[in-house]
Length: 272
Image (tube, rainbow, N blue to C red; front, side, top):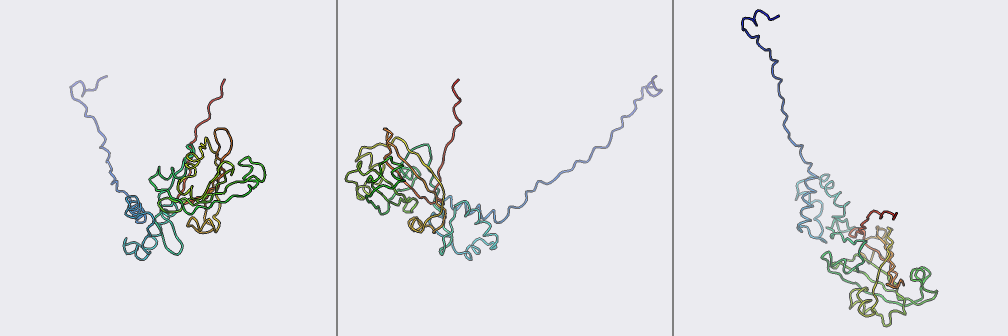
């Protein structure tokens, strides 16, 4: 039944709750730690070439004054750069800016010289040693040679922009390489190139096996690292189109500047 107020045409006022108070917050970002700012600054200087590869950072006391930070902040900024390989700690000399990493892919067969050229580095070769002797059991097995077969042993250090990056020992069946000398290889600049141009031998495929170990005293001296430093070792067997192995090589590479990249794809589905 309508109320007397409704019948009289008087509207009952609607009671509204007071509007809730709207709170706002200031989205102020937390300050960036000083060590992170310094790390980013050093990374930029390395990227643009202001800190060039092969150069050494000033002594710690100079860096503290230059950047106006504490010793703890400086060391916190340098630690990840050393861990990532952008900087190298050289005993007795200080901290050096590292060369850019050399990346070799595992799905394309290239000579080491071509790998360096593809990344803008000038390939070079140190002193080449060539000797002839009887193959060991390991070499004979890899090259499928009978015992006491003569092989050529080739030792060389490869450089990128003058810096040693790879020490390798290659074994070749002597019967396939008459007249092979260190001078021939040095003039060619590439073993694979020499195989193709002088001996008309074309490598069809290769198999690599890679592992890590510590550098021997001799390897360390040739590569410019410390004895016991980690190195990457790759055993490679190169095969001709006939299926006959033509080279067995052991390469020792500096792990601080060398990367081996392998591209993987899913297996093909089995045929019904």
